[in-house]
Length: 237
Length: 182
Image (cartoon, rainbow over all chains, first blue to last red; front, side, top):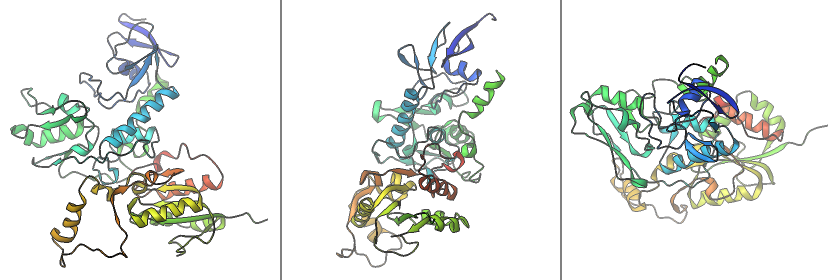
């Protein structure tokens, strides 16, 4: 084994991980999909969504914030964890107002794609039908609070050229919601609107004027199950 | 020996009939369908009331008024298997966008302040079913046995589900490309 590499096992399968990697990264490198929503590429993981919850020993940990260690044994695809994830998806669906038929992000939405993967039909929880605002005051960006899952990917990943924040969050706990500094000149640009839409896993941040361009049947998750791109790599590892 | 046909009832509550259109969208397979099912109370054959007990009830739309609730309960009573068809039946759908807005505000917008409103008055005839405080998904009113997502559910999904029910098979793991919420 190379220097800086360690052995861990996920669902009984032994894999080689790099020291310092998170469980999510190590799994991905080995063709194992652990579902995530708040985790995004190079961003510092936040562990807000709890979608990636796995079991290490007897403890539940978020796989995006937990660093691998030699000999670690991870449970990922058990019936219990799958059920947990489905339940969590359902909670997200009832907490906001996720009207897929009228959403611009439908077909490219990660929350919806995960719901497809876990075959959610009707959530077991009652819908909250909370009224939230839609802010379309910026020239290129629509902020649709009904669809926000508070993953904070925009807060962490969309910054102005000099690095200052454009997105932030207000309040805490159940009342938490994202906000955009509309007085910031960069918030009004097309570049930021595009970046925001690309980083948002759901349809909460939408760039104006570009919706419904891709026909139904050709969108990202119309035919491909989310995570299948990772799992395809499994045989090659 | 002729097989016993599956008796099917369908209805549209607070829906747009899109799900019924999608059922018709199975195209020529409808000829295969009528070989194995018999429609009872349904807009497809225009039966207004149940004339016998049914094996399967397909419900499109959620409940937005007292009449929807009455019909849904009647379906529950007369159908062995009751399926919520489409996003409106499952989530309340588009009509549920009114949920969370006060009834006063809704009625005033619809019958007074709307730009196309001519004769400004809120209808109040006993013939008109009472509107509910909000739109309810079907499973919040009666027990629903299966859910068929989509807006409208793909014709192929409806076909798949009908066949599985006819064959007495589980509805788990439906074909991915047909299992959609839009």
